[in-house]
Image 1 (cartoon, one colour):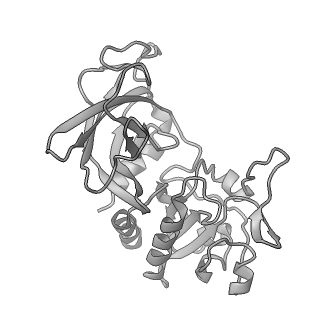
Image 2 (cartoon, rainbow, N blue to C red):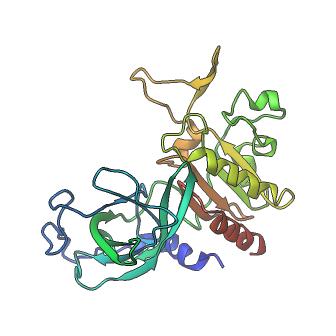
Length: 308
């Protein structure tokens, strides 16, 4: 079953978020936890979650070698121990195994689930298993914040406007998906959230994705939506402003040459793409997924929201 209870606690308890150090001190110099780049590492663990918050988190990380080539793969098992550095840098607060999520083309991330019970500086000791069966570990430090920018689990989805299309020709004017799934464009975000049915609100752009994870994730989300055509609403929003040119849809850049988020992406606080929200029939956020999404975890969450 999808961990709705744990995830829900993250939303309901943000007002109760407490500091890891009651005195408000920062863990500047912690024995055994050097700052990034201060020691030579056997491998480099990298936090890929854009913002980590108090409560339940879907924690994403990568593992690179000293030449910044990817070590993470489905053939390299990994696990993580988490420490509240300002409270106790010696005893781990939580331990979790990690699942490798492939985005295709030899790239992917590790995912684990963890509850952070205080706000402040945390440490993760990341373990990877070599071909010889031996485990090696490296440590990294990161910050846990009281709240995030996106709607929290249990909070209402935002009633944003978004572009719609009824035909493949119209979809080609608003979507960079070469094979658009039309039910993902026939309603606005607001109409989807208030449909009275569970829904997927998906921010992704296959053509202009900054992470390189959009394409395969778009195909996965479309396949899951097709499995529940009469039970699950779905809206796909291109997160950046686009305009039609002689070369097809292209980004409408700012004067500084930067991609410009559309209003819906700003309203939902999207930090990176792809970003997927699963909402229940009341329009409240049931689960959310940043970056690469695993088929098993998404299908488990959908089955849970449909049976809730």
